[in-house]
Each structure stands twice: as C-alpha cells, then as structure tokens.
View 1: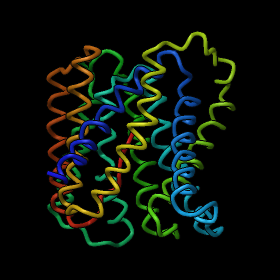
View 2 (view 1 turned 135 degrees about the vertical axis):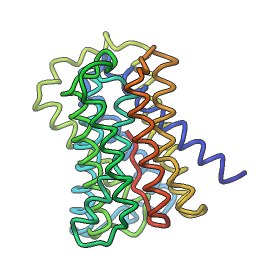
View 3 (view 1 turned 90 degrees about the vertical axis):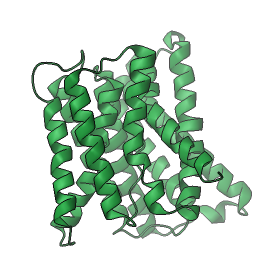
View 4 (view 1 turned 180 degrees about the horizontal axis):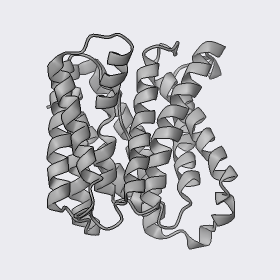
Amino acid sequence: MRVWIPLWTVYIVWGSTYLAIRYVVETIPALLGAGLRFFTAGAIFMAWIVLRRGGVAALRIGWKPLAGCAFVGIALLLGGNGLVVVSQDSGTPSGIAALVFATVPLWVVLFRSATGDRVSRATIAWVIMGFAGVALLLLPGERPEGATVGGILIVVAAAFSWATGSFASGKLRLPDDPIVTTAWQMVCGGAAILLVGVIAGEASDVHPSEFSTPSILAFAYLVVIGSLVAFTAYVWLLRNAPISQVATYAYVNPVVAIALGALFVGEEVTPLVAGAAAAIVASVAGTVRKEAPRPVAAAEA
C-alpha cells in the first residue's frame, strides 16, 4: 500500500499537468509562466535543503556539476516543457500533447542504440510502433480541432529535447543528491525559460489584472503539486520500489491526460487519436517492460 500511494500520485498528478498548462496559458504568458513555475519550485527545494541540511553549504557544488545541471535543466525544461507549453498555447489539445510527449523513452532507446549500446530487436520493434502512432496523428482527416501538424511537431521536438537531457544526465557529472540536482536543474532551466520569454517579448503581455482565477489556481497546482509533491513521490519510489514498477508512469500518464482533457474541456478523442494512442501507449509499455530494470527518465510536463 505504501508504494501505491506515491505511485498513483505520480500517475494522476503528472498526467494532469497537461490540462493545468492549458488553463495557465489562457491568460498567463506561456514561457514566462513556465519559467516562473520551475524557478519557484527550484527555489523552494533550495530553501528546504538549506533549512533541513545545515545551511547554504548543502547547496554548494563544483563548476562541473553546476554545468551539468544547467545543461540538463535547459534541455528538460526549456527544450522539453517550454516547447510543450508553446504548442499548447498555439491550440494543441492537452491529451495530444501528453500522448506525443510520452515517446520520450523511445527517443532514449534510439540515443542508446546510436551510441553503441546493444538494444534488442524486440525493443526496436516497439519503438517503430510508437513512432508509427505519432505518424498517424500527422495524417490529414480526423485530427481534433487545434491539433495542427505544426503543433504536434513542436511536441515531437519537446520529447526529443527531454530525452536528450535525460540521456545526458547519465553521462554528465552531477551532484550525488537527487534533490540538490533537481533544485539546481529547476532553477537553471526556469531561468533559461524566463530569459527566452523576455526575449520573445512576453513581458509586454504580462497584465496581472487579467489573469483568470483558473489560470492562477492551475499555476499554483503546477508549482506545488506538479513539481514539488509529485517529484518528491517519484524520488521516494526510485529508492523504495522496483524500477519496472516505477516506470509504468510513462504509459499511464498519457491515458490520464487524454481522459482529463475529454472530461474537463471536451477534447475530442477521434478514432484516429484512439488508434494513435493505442499504438504509442502499447509501444511505451512494451519498451519500458523490455528495458527494465534500466531507469526511465521522468517526463513531467
């Protein structure tokens, strides 16, 4: 039971972040909102570390670990989450975004294969099936309203970037403590998103008086529940549950996101989407199970 509570927390919370993003971007500038979310969450993690572990010294890391945190944080958050937010801001349904972003483990497998790691033929077959599901979403016809080819390709790029950061995290020098690592990655990645948002001209679109209550509540949810609570549950699971069990979030999250999008904002689940979802979810499930006990990088939107 003690494993299932944090596991379902990760299932539901990370599956719901896509819907929350949809509410945020309705009245809050997309990149600035995303950047502030992660910078705030990272700062809270840092404050917790300072209070619980004896002062600022607990946050001190060398230049190489800091550079590693910066690279991974920017790849995950600016390239990964930032592009998801941009895509949803352009109208991509939250369920579609979650579905395409779920291909992160498939990209990681391709990176491993490209760098000389032996990957079984069965795993490659699952990967091909998953990308075939994405290709289905690019076909003309029964895509839901807002699911443009451009928007879907932005999420493909987001998944590629997140997978790049995830793969690099196993190669770069990072702090030994996962909470310290996460805090620095969130602060660095959040700062990068804020900078890009300012460069993109979003600062002139900040009108707090126009922020809707749903947008504000969704933003708070993303910071507190999406980033702090769910990530803490994920870290606990990595230390207390089999990785094969923890990794199931990778194919449960998109199902949760599609269901919530349909339930709360009436997003269409057309036969084309259902077919693509079946292919992608089955592919990710097959890949994750085949590759266990290898860790699967977290893909939180």
